[in-house]
Amino acid sequence: MLFDLFERFFGKRDILIPYFDFASVMKGMMDSAVLAEIYRLRYEVYCLECHYLDAAEFDEGKETDEYDDCSIHFAAYATRDQAMVGTVRLVQPKDGQVYPFESHCTVFEDFTMPARAQAGEVSRLVVKKTHRRRRGDSMEGVSKDFMEQKGGPAMIKPPSGKEQRTNSPLLLLGLYREMYRYSRKNGIRYWYAAMERSLARSLEKMGFRFVPIGPQVDYYGPVTPHMVDLYELNDRLKQENRFLAAWFNDEPIPFWVVVKTMVGTFMIGRSRKK
Image 1 (cartoon, rainbow, N blue to C red):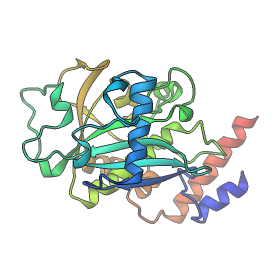
Image 2 (cartoon, helix red, strand yellow):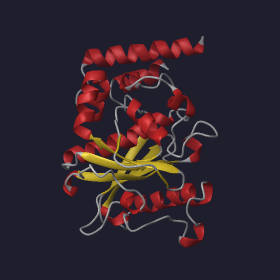
Image 3 (cartoon, rainbow, N blue to C red):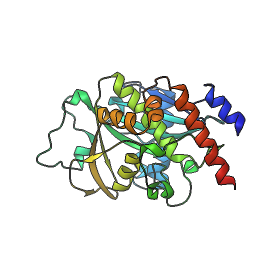
Image 4 (cartoon, one colour):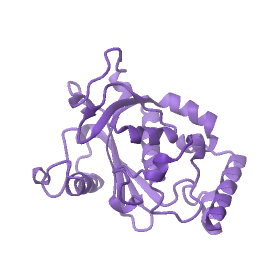
């Protein structure tokens, strides 16, 4: 465990998510091998496991739709074997094309949508079954324990040991971190997402305060359209968890913050073993 913390402390591995690597596929790169693998993972979860979509409607075991070519796709890989274990996309529709959530959700009458160039929709978020803790955990890889845990961004800390399979909330956080960095670099301030309220509550514990912008509807289960302001997220993280704020923004983490965080994590790990 000490060697593991040492490697992360000196930057040889990601200090918060050391067991996952990430890749992205830009808009229009439809021949990407990574994108083909993303399609297969989505097919596995949406068609074969959850039966949300009819497997017979898709060729070659790949789940695709009309939004894939106007999306930035993100993938997570397990470091130990480089197997893809999670994916999400950020949709920026073409001119004349609605956001995916608009096809099955409505917004409140007093809600004004921001400029399209400043917004994208979080969509097709899935985590491979092998990287969810136990039966009943969400398709997005959020455990029941995390959903029921009280607290906010301040409780997000590096794993205390080799918690590879049991770290599903951090896998989700890593995917969101990749989307966040892309968004900040490309002038995207707002994200939409149609999701269950339980996922929205879990994301708020990570700093993402998704606000409902419309009523709940039944779309493969109860979902509500939400929106989050990434500027507000950044301000909140700087107040509540300076370590997490620096990590999200790919900024140097102050030495004393790293030491304090890692020592606290080490002590938590020791207490769990007693």
